[in-house]
Image (cartoon, rainbow, N blue to C red; front, side, top):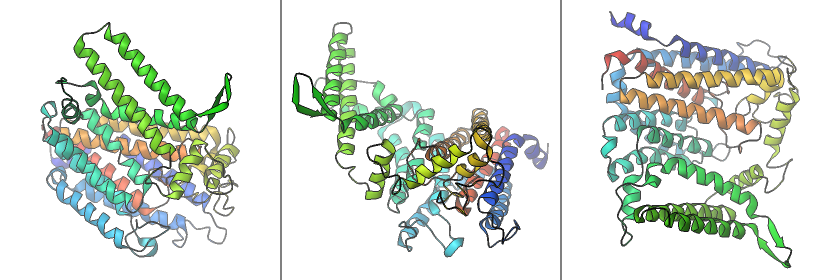
Length: 465
């Protein structure tokens, strides 16, 4: 079979069709949200919907170019691509600040955000690295290199600062976990420094990534309770801060579990349980104490957003204005919505919801199409994610599979956090909705990412590695 025929035969038209649907829905929503009676033509390039039409055209063109490139190029040149994105991340730090962040490279409205494209470079290099190591015999160097691939751009992005993209990079941790990159070598080296303890395997190290996220979640719950002052009936004049009650309860629970298992398990298992309990206790109590006493290392507005999200403070007309107005707009849509171009709370003209065509694009859509329309949109995103996972699982190449899972996790983070921001389930950290939000950088990077996946998948039968 000829190469051109093979590409078309193996081309995933379902994924491409979902992509086109999102482009059309996103453009229609931006046109409705930013509509101006003085500029009714969608081809008016002075308006945001006209500019978005240009970005869609550019993205489709770049996607076509990316698809025409041989898939081997992405394997062979993943290191130069990664280094190029890092260079852009360094250069952008010396550019003038825009809205308090040095994240834009370019002139005026034609600027791009290198952070958006750095996700592509990191995904390609991580896929290349994992495909060339034996994860069953991983060493400390394996773990350090894999983590460094994502940590270096994360540090540069944090210097901008761009909290949203920084958070998205943590999605690669789940990709590493899926492929078997564990923290056993590091955890074993740490634990085996304890006199009389010698392990060859640790449950903590093998499942460190999900454990870390679980403890962060538990820490947030701890933080919610830590500001509460608790008084006891037998000592009403001796109030105790809630965080000490939680720390004491965790310590008591840990000791109880240890002593119970001490009489039921072998000595080796008792030591393992004790180490796990101690590490869990230190992670939860330590993280909670750091966050509770000042959010060290966070900017003031970032602290405010976290505290507002957790309900530790209220400022509905100040720092929490965007989130409150977004929830009001979503709720005003009701079951069936107000109809196309009838959004009142979230329209650009009303300006009740700032950035309603970018980070809060879900608001006008939900207001126009209501709960039913929102469910349809969420179902489409879930279909997109499921389709990418199906593509990942049918790959013969480790490189292809890792890259596909990286794309799936990046899209999932953007989808979940963006909609979470709009309905009050996540703090406002500035993350666009894939293929939907207004903006050239995000649309181009998402498109390039997707078309690389389509290219790799179309040639999956030609690659056996």
